Length: 221
Image 1 (cartoon, rainbow, N blue to C red):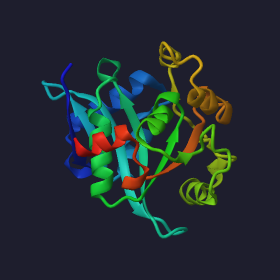
Image 2 (image 1 turned 90 degrees about the horizontal axis):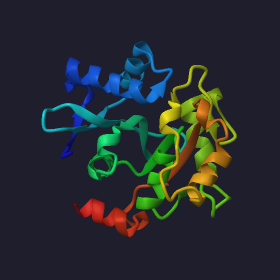
Image 3 (image 1 turned 60 degrees about the vertical axis):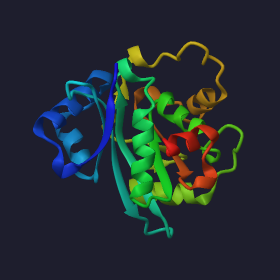
Image 4 (image 1 turned 120 degrees about the vertical axis):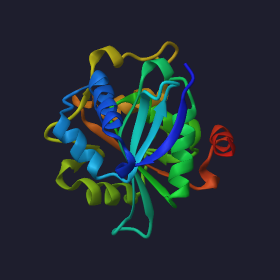
């Protein structure tokens, strides 16, 4: 399926787009209520969206870029993110997300994830990020940014919300060939409560020097 990607500021989202985003989240996650979804959206600058030829949203990632109070950094914080299985192999969302975050001046990516697919995005495009299986020692910056953003919900590298969103069992299966993937194994080790919605906190520098070959190709595209 052909899709196109774009950045849409929050105030420019139509009622139809908001509804489609909510329904897409609910089709893959349990615990997603209308009130919580729209409350989370209201805290973001906008959304990177994937749309098919008919304009239907097939994937999205909400995004907030802000100046940290605990470090001299401009941080990109990813909120709700999902891509429909019909377009999961498309690179468009990744390409638009990277371009948008960089255009908005973000220097550091703060990501929380309750699924290994999102975590697996990191080593594809970035050389260095935390936490990861072959770099056990992580910088103090991760704790600082996490506590600044999540307060008491954060502890030991993980955010535990009182009313978490959790992936449906049907989309928790590892893809073929990934049964022994060290990144996925590490994600499950560091975040043993991921199936109930616990979120692993990750950080990643967004500078050119941290891009992998795939990341550089994505930026050029």
